[in-house]
Image (cartoon, rainbow, N blue to C red; front, side, top):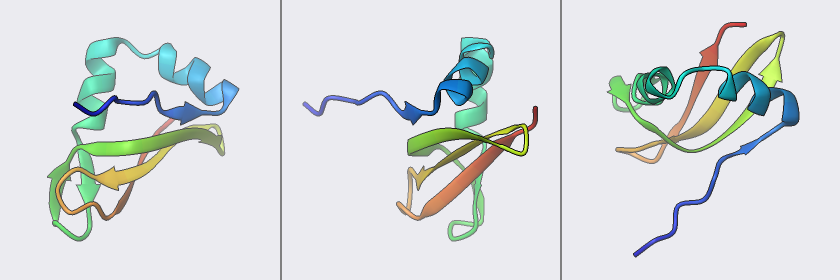
Length: 74
């Protein structure tokens, strides 16, 4: 059984992420566009940082393992 690790976030990104309710966080993670799969996917193995006052999640597509990102506007 694999042990899931917590995503790495910068301190400001962690504060922003934690300010979002758990149910909304789950919806955001499951609603990421993959340019390779050409449909919505779930992001995995992601990191978080604040860029231009937006929360940027960068990770991998759960289906094809390609690079994906999600911007959550500030």
